[in-house]
Image (cartoon, rainbow, N blue to C red; front, top):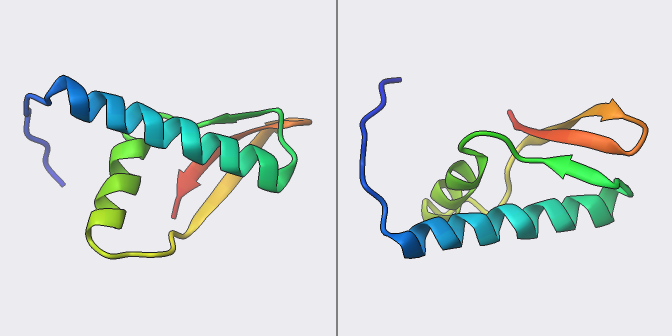
Length: 74
């Protein structure tokens, strides 16, 4: 898959940050974690899936500590 450079309006950046924060908080609460990391472009992948009508995402949390994990979409 190739990539293209686009310029994003600041409001889109704010939306992606909000999505990242909301997903991390939900996962922390659901899986009793102290820290969850959504790396790279994870928030934009989640937003794209939502805009494409997907209501569920396949993911896993790779634990990298007792109460820490990294979200990975499958």
